[in-house]
Structures are given as C-alpha cells and as structure tokens.
Amino acid sequence: MAHLKQLAPVAPHVLAAFKARSDDIIRAVVAQALTHTEQVAGHGDQAERLLTAGLRYTALGLQTAIFLHNTTLLDWQLAWAADRLGHDGVQPEHILTRLHIYAAVVEQFLTADDALAINQYVHWMIAKQTELMAKAESRAANQF
Image 1 (cartoon, rainbow, N blue to C red):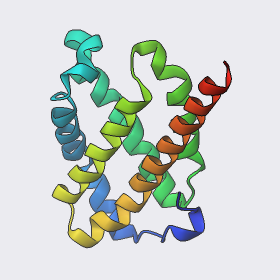
Image 2 (image 1 turned 90 degrees about the vertical axis):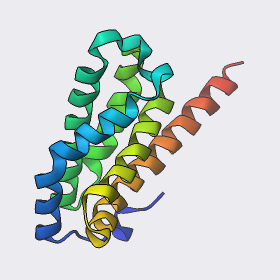
Image 3 (image 1 turned 45 degrees about the horizontal axis):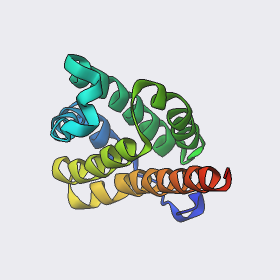
Image 4 (image 1 turned 120 degrees about the vertical axis):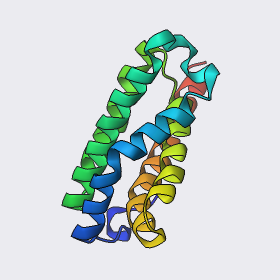
C-alpha cells in the first residue's frame, strides 16, 4: 500500500476540477455500480439513493484528504465502513468494486494528468480496503 509520503500533493486547480465534476462522477459511478445487481439487490428500490449518499461521503473524504495531503480521514472512513456497512448488507467486496469503478470514472471525467493525481488517493483507498479485507479474512480463519 502506498504510504502518504509516496502520494504527491495535488495542485489546487486539479482539486478544483475534481470538485467541479464530483456530482457527475458520483452519478456515473452509481449508474455503473447499479449494474452489479447482486451487490445492490438488498437495497431494493433505495439502491440508487443509498449508493449516491455513500459516494458523496466518499467524495468529500477524498476532497478533504487531498486538500490536507493526509489519508487519516480515508483510513477512518474505510474502518467505519468495515464496521458499519455490513449491517446494511454491504460487503467489503462491494466497497472494493465501487472504488475500482470510481477510479475508472475519474479517468473519464478529468484530464489524464488530473485523473492520475486524484486517483493516487483512490488507489490508496483500494489498497487499504484490500488490506482490511485480508486482515478480516485472516482473523476469521484463525478463529477455528
């Protein structure tokens, strides 16, 4: 997983471009996530609304982390998601899928250089989510 010192600071104009396209990015991620019907079936007719709310939370966390050049908030978000979202039928794999979709959509809405700058943080989240999933799997395996 990338450490903070490996994440380059993001120029203010890049962060501004990301913020300006945030709603478009969220809509596109939600549309793609909804095609994973097995992952959203448990949300019923509230799936679009719930995904949108969750991705707004993610986007705000990303914007803050990028502005501060600090991943602590993202770490907390992922830990919270691991603890809380399972109660809503959201599995760790679902979060990972949505983060992969998010990174791909960022590439569609921003210039290549801007997407690279933003996605270093999204890829940090992907690596952290993967790490959290591996730790949870290891704990579960060691319980027996």
